[in-house]
Length: 403
Image (cartoon, rainbow, N blue to C red; front, top):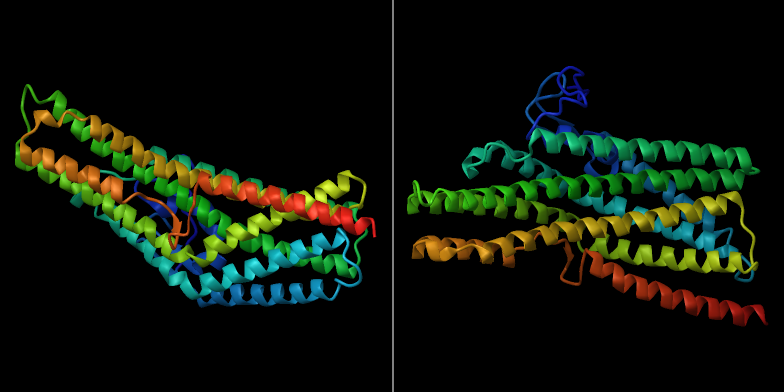
């Protein structure tokens, strides 16, 4: 069964509504090897098929093979760390951190990829049953088109940047066997982390649009109720039934969103948080010693530092997106608190208050075992940690340089 796109049915200008597969297809292509380990199908594929994800043993084997290559990469870096510690060793340590973290991520997804498939399939089923929630569309065509174009743009930028950087290293660096092995291992790491990155991007972007649509439907219905109150008041039973359906829509979206937390927590979120801190500490230390003239750099060293900084910036953006999804919840809650429930009867007022309680207590947050919450608050804590340890590392470097 093929998953190639029919050009007529699914061109960039004709992305169908309510099809999360079509909307995020460019990102899925880069994340279905090590994250999904499955092939994906929808009614707009050629030939058409029911929307679903199908586990692929072939992609599992590829993921395991990539891990074996990364294990060899750790061994290769360790045998080249010898003698007195120098700032140049920081690059090798960064590579080891890259390798070890990527191996952890890949093994987590090998063991728990069924959880991701359950979340994806659950979202498809939720959209297919949209009429049970009293809505005609959950992912409108304009939102789907925006997601598709955004994912396609990011994929093209990622692939183009990798090709340019990879060729630049070959053109401007004296390549020997050791450096070639390090470069090859690094490309495997970037491929794996790129899959994780695009999985996170398509997840946050997609749920951002879905929650916005849910909040829009709630606000539109309640606003229309106020406007039509003087002319043709909606009966209490219809009002309560409609609001209950929208509440169930929110709860289903939120429950499906939290399945991603089950996939990522606590291992991936905590490890990646520590990982980014270590990268920033190493980056800050090495960059400072380079500016001070204590150490020189190869073009490959610049390549490593650029990738480290890019990864840290990507993590910061993901924290920002997670915060935005949580803040959208606060906006609709604020609207509901201002809603004139005095114009409703007691049963209708109670239903509005129930909706407020649901939105307040069941926020769409990404947490790691109640230890950390993915958001901008986490970045503040990380910034303080990074600055502290960079200063400590520079003090140790000053002491060692005087001995």
